[in-house]
Length: 285
Image (cartoon, rainbow, N blue to C red; front, side, top):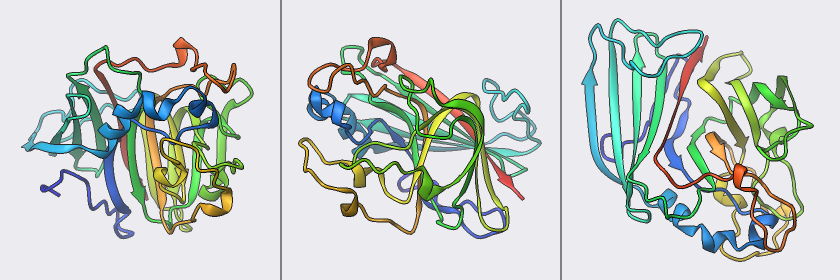
């Protein structure tokens, strides 16, 4: 969609998978520990940067016989094309006075390399809760397989017991029902990730480096209580006819040294700086 720069159709012969295209995401629903150090207020610029992204430019290039991306190469398959398109959407982020761009490099196999670049970031800004993409696909693709840490949820500072392996689950089983709704269900150190329907058709997501993901039948905002705890419960959270996916370069740690003031350790924080990451979407036929 050239009006807002989002991907609106991705069809590999089973109909359109996409319900809502990629948006750059810097925010997570605050956890109990997050409320302890007033994260919703201290880091609120990044929620505003997630919610308010103003399209500045939309550029389309035809790459002819060239590689679509010369810089990003996947270990098992360099992204080479005979014919391809490269579409770049650039957004202003008024909340942090920076910019973010998403580039879609599409080859003649229907593979889409999604590259996100954050620029113009002042290092005096607060740390980022998260850096990744959020998008929504059709509910039919509810079968999830990932090679990474599992089977239970895990975060960068809470993953020792989650061993690297090949895991399968339904999307609804990735949801961890904390008694008070909050961020949940993340998986880290992922190498490959797929979403398939009952016929085994769908999409495969890979990246040059390990990544994190979560997937729910809820929007991220469904778990977000805002700047203050609302003391909701699991029965207040709707189950929606969709699959909401987060693909993250990184999400800050959960913390937990105490729940009334301490932030996650510094090594599990995401400093404010220019950042970039990429991942590839391939069809599973």
